[in-house]
Length: 480
Image 1 (spheres, rainbow, N blue to C red):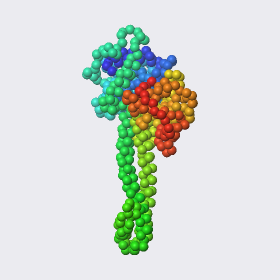
Image 2 (cartoon, rainbow, N blue to C red):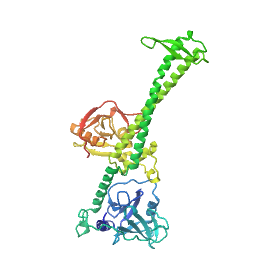
Image 3 (spheres, one colour):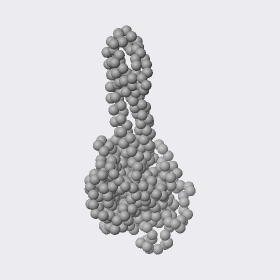
Image 4 (cartoon, one colour):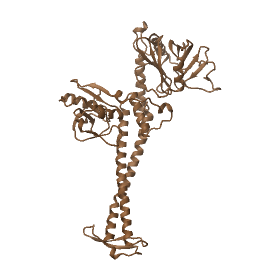
């Protein structure tokens, strides 16, 4: 934000928020605050950001995650601030002051220093002393921000942008007639975030994406190792055959022999083969050793098969999560994905802010729309909600949709056996394809079946199902 745009935006915020009561304060990330304000008519959310995609202050319509335990500074603001008296900007720099009164009518100023990497949010009292700050500094640094000490205003900075931007700055006149500057700012920073993601893969899901990628790499390595073990276990059948051959030739064997030559009747035609023996054991004990190795290999094969199936299901589940993170999920969906990764052990957050997530109910995250002819369509955008859609909302005669053989959402048309026109089926299939890994493809195959043919897999991660029979529609992905 350049100074002139910020100056104009603050004037608009003053007219919109003056006198508002604080309902709640959230801190979704270490450098981001959300103040929920009630102006007597509507509730509005004021965003203050001092890092990440850039220093900013504006109203926001986006929902942000609410950590289970509020961080230190967030708790302080909840306790000290009650009503917003005024918003003003420093006449010479990008410093926004929000003047509040507290529970006992004491005065506070929340100072947002919008300086990029050096930005900070500081709460000071009526004596102009620091109460606390979003980022604490140490005594002795060039400009200390220390609780209990006087607030020191920053030096006027070089290179402040005073250039008027026609894209942002409204014409002079009545503030009420200006365009929605907060909306323009929000759209601008959304575009900045999207550009950074395209260039560097940096976004709000970066830690989750990294955890999923690491987990998939580990699982694929495990899968390769299991395949090698299965190849070894498959040789156990030869051990059984060798044991059978020894039993058939006990009459030519005796203790002390190191090997015996027998006719291998498992070959076609039969051939003579040599089998190794332990001289210290009897012929019967040597035969039992071969059978023992066979039984061990057989148990190992069964174990490997179970591990193979479980690993393949875990990979499929993580591929689903990877797709969901690419699908621009809401913050609530993101919280549920984070919760699932933590529960499964694939994501171990470094901080409490990353770890603690307020529990979400899948029922509240179901997406809903209507087809052209008015049929209700519902779908999920995370594994837990997909599981809820297919387990609870799906009835035996409803239509169920999923992208064919690729990660995607579970989507249903609530038809209950009624005839659904093909127009509505194609609409639903296009929407389903748009929330799949193939969202950017020109044509996508989508499975369609009745709910009675969709079965949960026992022991499988949430969101994985088995489809007994289906037909396929080819559609162009289209989001609503």
